[in-house]
Structure formats: C-alpha cells, structure tokens
Length: 123
Image (cartoon, rainbow, N blue to C red; front, side, top):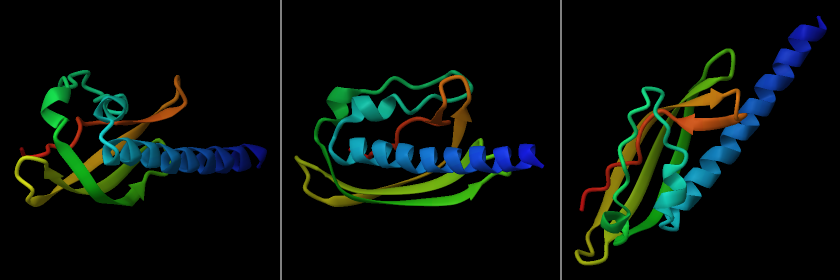
C-alpha cells in the first residue's frame, strides 16, 4: 500500500511541476523571450527546428490561454492546448496562433518538455 501512496504523491508533484512549467513557458512567450521559451521545446525525435529569434523580434503577444486537456495515468505525458493572441509591429493586425501539443516528463532532468517546436507565428 505505501507504494501506491508514493505513486500518487509523485503524480501530484509532476502535475504541479507541469503547471509551473506551462506558466514559465507562456510567460516567456508573452514577454517576447523566445530564446527562453525555445529551451522547453525538445521534441523526442531530436529534430528541433532552430528558432529564428530575429524573425520573432517584432512579435508582440497580448494574451494567451492554457488548457491541460489530459494527463496520462503515470503523469509523464500531457495533452495541452495553448492559444496566443499577438500582433506584428509593422502590421498592427491582431492574430491568434493555436498550439495543441504533447508535453512529456523527463525523469533524468525532473522537468516537463514540449514535444514540438515553438508556435508558428504568421508574420
């Protein structure tokens, strides 16, 4: 019985870490710190796309929503929907980019990582 209790606590700790990680990720994007945000994007395939920071310099994010759709039974994978409202300085038109992605828990680093690249902001 203690093992089941330990697993539940581990699951709660991971879920708490997921919330903290998502806050840090969307906060970095919200304030235009795409370099920091890109550190969360580590696809399990190992094929992360390089981030063109110069291209993203003109993106101004005005808001976001985060929804955790599902966390698996072992609390090591989560389906998350993110939505960012933004504009590009030169254009001034407001756009929205959605990102439905899987986040996974990396046991070695005790951290959650995005199994995808950064959202694709249309510029």
